[in-house]
Each structure stands twice: as C-alpha cells, then as structure tokens.
Image (cartoon, rainbow, N blue to C red; front, side, top):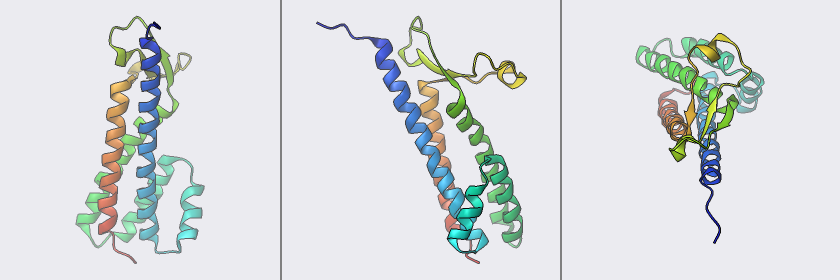
Length: 166
C-alpha cells in the first residue's frame, strides 16, 4: 500500500486556496471598473481603454477618488461611503500584492499541515518593508484573505447600485 505524503497534500491544498483567493480579487477589479464606468458617463469602450491603461492599482484608485470627488460632490453620504470603500480597497490591494508576489516556502517539519506551505517575502528582499514586519500567509490566512476579497467585491457591488447614472 502506498503511503500518503502529507507534504504533497498540503501543497495541493495550498495552491488550490491561493488560486481561489486570487480569483476572488477579480470581483473587486470588475466592480471597480463598473463604478468607474458609471461615474464617468462616457461610453463603456472609452472607459475601458482609460481604466485598463492604468496598470498600477494605486494610481487607478487615485484616479477613481478624484472622479468620485467631482461626481459625488452633492451627495455627502455617498461620498463618505466611497472614501471608506476606497480605503478598504487600498488595504486589501496590499494583501493581494502579498499573495500574488510573495514566494512560496515549505517546511515539512511543521506539525500543522496548514502551515507546511506558506507565502513570505522573498529571501533576497532586504527592503525594510520586507524585513521589518513581514506578513506570512499560511493556507488558512490565504483562505481568509480570499473571503475578505469576496466581501469587498460585494460591498463594491452594493455601492455601484447607489451611484447615479450621469
């Protein structure tokens, strides 16, 4: 009888959860585009060209914040809601960058199967942000992060429903 390899099972689960979490981020980006599209009032193909030409998420969010200042200026409740959502997007985009760009590490000596595989800053990244307080993502934390992305996408969808068409 073939002996089960817990490291192999953990690896498959790790990458399954990682893929699922990254896929949840798509919902965030989709709703950000829909909000941008509605706020501009321009034809969708034009908005798509503008929105997706800006690759940097921070710059894209700044562009949307400036647009929201203009479009939502007469609705303080909606403006305040956007500001809170924008901060959440900024916070969650940092986590998205972690799980998208951190390096997988494995340690078969770890007794908890959900911690055998994890994401950490690259071992050669000597920047202060990586060494000062490195965020480490085990399978459970990656799964939680994916759930946070899903909740954020739902919040953006709900916000979208409130944004007036120009």
